[in-house]
Image (cartoon, rainbow, N blue to C red):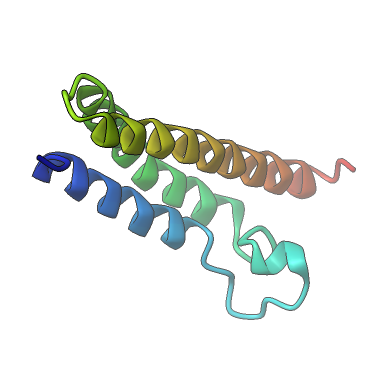
Length: 107
């Protein structure tokens, strides 16, 4: 028995949302800009994060449900997905903080 359809849809939706968050602005030239922090306005990053937040919550719920699966491979996959999601959520938070500090003129 493999992972549930709900879980697989949540993983796919979150991955698409995370990729969309980190899409660079139209004139990305530096590494920070390629990470989606540069010419992308803070308001746009906030909108992207607000789009990603419910997908993150949905994935957390779906993966948590998979942790109760009888199949150890399914449980392992869910654990890895939760760790990857946590890292991505931290990267999103870091990008938002950097953009806000940059807009405010802070180092």
